[in-house]
Image (cartoon, rainbow, N blue to C red; front, side):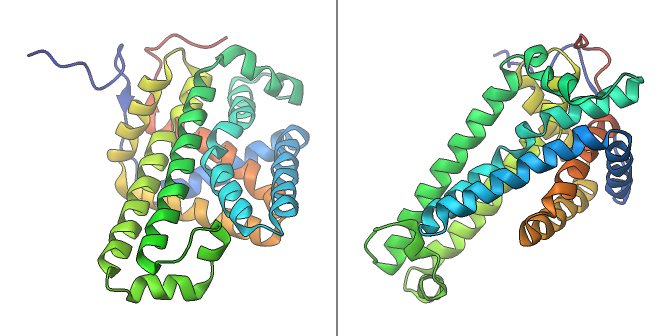
Length: 265
């Protein structure tokens, strides 16, 4: 029986990098921000405003707040598409203006949107599964997600007679988060740079992550740290978001060589 190829064709060359390499990506991301401050910070401002809107709308409904933030972070790699294009232009010696960054959506077509739609669906399903799982363990009526954010509910779930379900739920959450990260680590930058489908870009991203577990663990911790600081300070996202977006472009350039694929305009 013949099997469908796992990786895109023509072949992509994958590289293995040291565990400390993500620090270099962050430094390169900061350098890109300094090269195009107005265009980069405009993306950071958009992220800040989006976060403020989410907080305002969800202040009286923690279920909406939790779900919105989850979805917001899941589709974040897609929202950084303009930042990837800015880094691409800087690399090529082209003007990295904001208008040029917006034009990237016309060039790349619907492929990043398809990736984002799948991620949003995954996030929605996971929130619903979480509600039902905690409700089943605590036997609490499902009136809204806000009731499940209370520490007492989590303690009840962890100490219930079905605590094994709680452990399984946590493990499943870690697996879902790992798959989402692997699927998006370099897939959107790859779509910005080269002509291929969303499926092949996601598969290439998963392959790149699987070949660099140590480096990608460090990269994950850096992303979580910068994101947590940004969210805690709200306006810290103004700087953290563009730096991470630019850094993700350099991660893509470091982890694989896609020159065999047709180039985007």
